[in-house]
Amino acid sequence: PFMLDNREFVMRFLVKSEEGNTMVANESVDDRVDYGAASRTTRALTRGLFVFEDLPLRGGVQQCRVTLVQQLDAGGAIPTWVVDKKLPLALSTVQEAMDDFRQDDRIDAADREEMSAFIKERSREEVYSLEEDALLQRVRQKFEGSLGESKWTQLKSPDNFVTMESVFEKGGSSAAIGRAVTI
Image 1: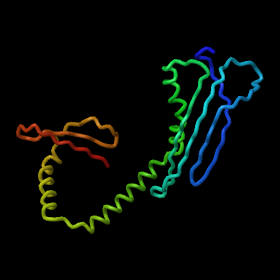
Image 2: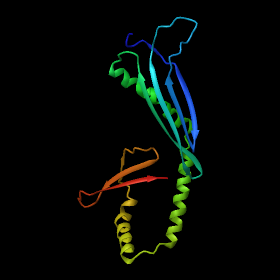
Image 3: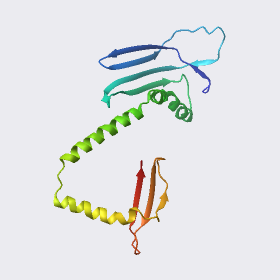
């Protein structure tokens, strides 16, 4: 068969759920398919396993881990560059499922709420030593003068919701101060 002929896959699928996990297995079968017309394809073989594992609730949101392992016998020689190009497409179903079921906003909101409650609860109980109070005072004094300064240089941020800036200390020092701000 020519290496770039279209490939035909005929498979059997099996779905099984047990103890919060679901597995979807597929394997090629040797069945003949009548398409009603002749087609020029090369029969290829594949075997795959999807595993969906339930994870603990996070902020009241159900999550799962999805793993796909897939094997392919293209039924003839295929150049490595073609495999490298097509394999991500074959595995992209995991990304597509993630996009369809994405709940990042709900999970992030639940995480923020949990972290905020933890910080509020702990801050009431926290007792700082004289040394810790002195450290906080030194650091605040160091940066208070530069926090309002208008000579900050805008930096390229990897995130649209975070601004990043830098400024060099006054007096010829080579020390720089960086600042990242988000709301």
